[in-house]
Amino acid sequence: MENKVDILMVDDRPENLLTLEAVLSSPDYRLIGLRSGEDALRYTMREDMQNVAVILLDVQMPGMSGFETAKLIKDREKTKDIPIIFITAINKSAEHVLQGYQAGSIDYMFKPFHPEVLKLKVDAFVQMHRFHQNQYDYLERLVRERTRELIIASEERVAWEKEMAKLARLNLIGEMAAGIAHEIRNPMTTIRGFLQMSKKNQSMAVEYIDIMLEELNRANGIITEFLSLAKNKTTHFEEAHLNEIIASMQPLIQAEAMLSDKHFHVNYGEIGSLQLDEKEIRQLILNMAINGLEAMAPGGAFTISTYMEGNAVVLKLEDQGSGIKEEYVEKLGTPFFTTKENGTGLGLAVCYSIAARHRATIDVKSSSKGTAFTIRFQPAG
Ligand code: ADP
Ligand code: MG
Image 1 (spheres, helix red, strand yellow):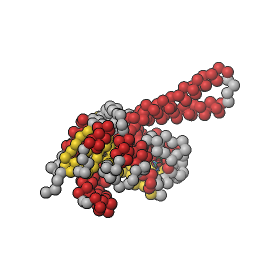
Image 2: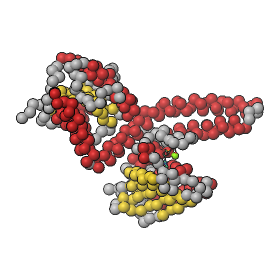
Image 3: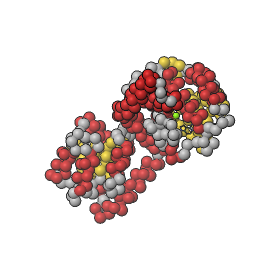
Image 4: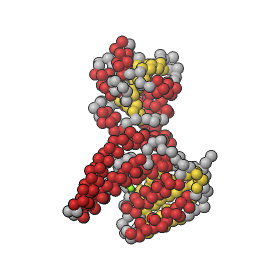
């Protein structure tokens, strides 16, 4: 029987500590909860650290942040080899800061995390800890590889992690909203004042007015789209039929298509009704239709189909456009990701958040011949 190993969990919120405790609880582990970076450092100085297999560190804490705490832990001889798993809601800054550390003894989990994945990671570090210090480097690599294999082995888990990463991105949106509104409203105020002035003295060239109006509309569009991403937005679900929603939008999309010399088709399948927020679904279809039309050269066709797949109602939107580069597919749905000169990069973010609220999944297939977005709605159960 092997001795228990120590696992330090550092988080300022007691409820998070409780969650970690519930996830990791095991007769093999002694779980030590600490409420701040300062407490963690104090602990590492006073206690025997030989038995600590891994430290879980919340990144966002008042006082000393997770990253600062980690730096001080890694700076000390006694604790420099103890692996750290950062738990963070923020993707970018974590990646940025992590570059500074030696790979191998650092890992991270993005909130919201899948408990099984965290367990797997911790387990891997615990096994690693149990081997002799001399074999540390070799085994570290081995365990990492095994963990990766385990994760890859289960397709479902990979899909789940991707889903989680997307959810984490959606959380970010709320945090970014305040900053964005500020960014956009300032120029809007200026432009509006300018326009009002020029109306009085009439000396401004018409083309400048047009440009300013365009900017104004664009800024306004960003705000509107952005607010529709806001987190705790209330959605009004009512029994509705996808086919009817599409039919009501058909003239609009048809007109858009004709303007740029493209075709538009609909294949209405025999599908059941769903609990939907009709306004949101219209928005989703419109955003995807505009993207599809924009991606195609004149002559191309954009097709919307509905059909059943088992119990699920499927909405498929296909274009014959230029496709999406493989390295960009992962980024779809991230706010502000755009490859267009005048894009907002918010259309798909809106679609993903609408789908999430409807518990629908979005699947993307893309090649140089075109792109298909498949949205699967689960029937109300
Ligand atoms: P925007 O249209 O303002 O760029 P979106 O969020 O609607 O923002 O789309 C983000 C990016 O995803 C686009 O810039 C484009 O690169 C890519 N994209 C989305 N839909 C398609 C599509 N149907 N075909 C090709 N690329 C697409
Ligand atoms: Mg778009």
